[in-house]
Image 1 (tube, rainbow, N blue to C red):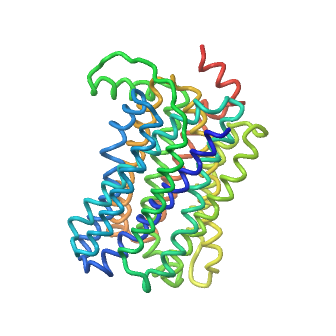
Image 2 (cartoon, one colour; image 1 turned 60 degrees about the vertical axis):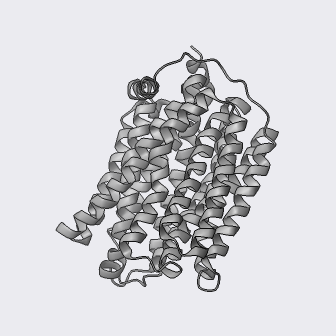
Image 3 (cartoon, helix red, strand yellow; image 1 turned 180 degrees about the horizontal axis):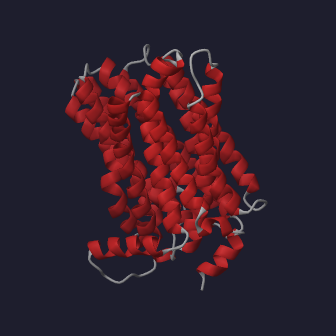
Length: 403
């Protein structure tokens, strides 16, 4: 599958640059731009804003435009954004830095939706699981390697240099996207943008598999965002670990995602998708519950193991649900459906973070952890009591989707 190889190469460049920015933005803002805590919060929000504002319109574009051109555009936009970020740091402009990372984020969002629409055009139903695993490996690998690397060099390397390195990632993505072939563009009826969005949303809400997938993702992302807020005071006040264990835990999460992604590609046609669709949220509920058992005297390696599990199961789930989405959604609607689901997912993350902080303030750190566990459990329950538990094979889904 040469198309998948080129797409995977583009994914490596895109996710390397995106993860670099994700880790570096708050650090560079504090160290190089002397930004206030409030400003740092706004800069971090700028990265999420691209997902919230860009997912729907980019999803519509993915249904109507040449996907090769969109992939090339995504890399170009990110490259310009990261280059401008480096210049903004050099000029000491916080405002320019925020605008630049937002622009780069739009390129990342466009690439993600474009890639999800390319995969089912380049792989058969039997190859879909392995193909989706292939393009998720870069995200998982970068989520492990990049945080460790930035943490080691951030004190010795100027901030602008980090974003120039991000430009190299976008340049790789541009080179690999240029190698992609052109894809058939099916003519669609001219409709108002709002009508197109509502059509995609209605399709998700009425679908026996896509609705529970969406609800599972919403509860999971709410829980994970809240956990990132709750974990810092929990480490200090409940567990008695060093603050640095927070960063190592996130790296353990990334390592788990690498392992889960690698295994998922090899199990795609050997294990019923239903098992993986329940295994992902199930392991999250178990791992988060394990955090409630930690306390003074506990080994920090238990925390690392729990975060490894949080990365391992959900990474397998992500690949499986991507395959289900691609098989059950009409090709001409795939971009919109992906955009609707992605908007819901990224829209809930700020709410989860706010809720986690608010809950800890009102009821204490332990109650905050209980909120996190409750949301992870809900993500499992909406899957376990849905038709997702009956998905026996991707081939059967492909046959159903063609009816």
